[in-house]
Length: 457
Figure (spheres, rainbow, N blue to C red):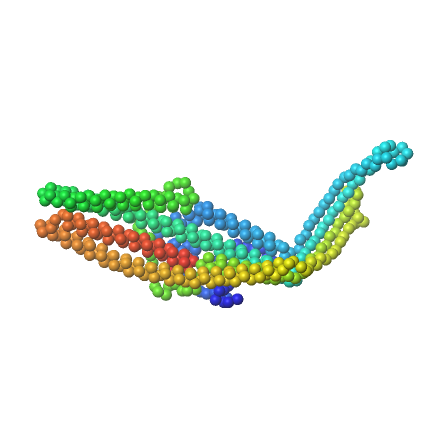
């Protein structure tokens, strides 16, 4: 197998039952790789440094019904895997039979017996049997390996579901918190626009500039419409939070501070961290399952061997059931060799090989896509941080402009409208900061999901 397409995982192979253990260390090309041991792999959202976000995500993971369904499905796969493993062991059965019967003989010329002669009898038997298929050609072992690989894939699917739910919860909560800031800012803008409209209206009565009044009213109506849309979006986000909690009670966020993005250096994320991604782990496990199915299909071309042993008692009296004089036993072997199946077995082997090839290509393409996804998110974060820096500078300049306009007004060289327009410009800058902050936070959440967990702490 091409090592480029392999992410070897620690698995338990043998005749022991399969256990659900989601904490096995990942490997890359057959060797363990080191990650930052202080990184929050599962509780990655704690790196965003918001106590309320921490509580919300953890409540979602505890109460979300989709995640509970995924956990139940994982347990079902584990039980099915144990059933497959059990086929490798001998099957022992215990049987007990007891019956009574009556037979009528009619028309037999026996003097004094009458026309109908009734014969009653009892029959009791006790059997203990053992059957065992001997796996000379490795078919059962290959089926077991395939089942264990599918269990690994199911474990990774559960981790992926947990990661996806936590990511969706974090993204939705962050959007809700920022929507509150957006609504507050739009309300501030409306208040300033009303003051500006009042000032323009008063001035228009003296200058007959009604076009300025119409323009100010249009801007106010547009902002009020924007506020209505923002409130509707906030309600949708609140409903989404409630749905994530699988609750019929409305969720109310109380946070008044934004979550934080910890600064990330260029060397923080190593390429090997992508090996932690549960979707890649699941695909690698599916690849191993497909490889095992090739062995299953190949072993089906060879004979199967089984042995059977049985012993017990058979008597016509229940009281003699444990009497050794009525004991019975049997021993036998069975060999079943495929001779002619119209080429079906060869075609099944060929199909299994093609399925393995398809699984390897899918796995390889997902690896390439994962690296590209992380690179894109890192580039996005750099661009958003640059925008944040520029907006911070613009905010500072806008505040200086307001102070300058206010100073001119106090000296009688300016007017109120200039001050109000400067305040509107500052609010627009602040609104842009809110949007960029939202994009930056959600991009960081996506980056955590892309590398399978935490990485900064």
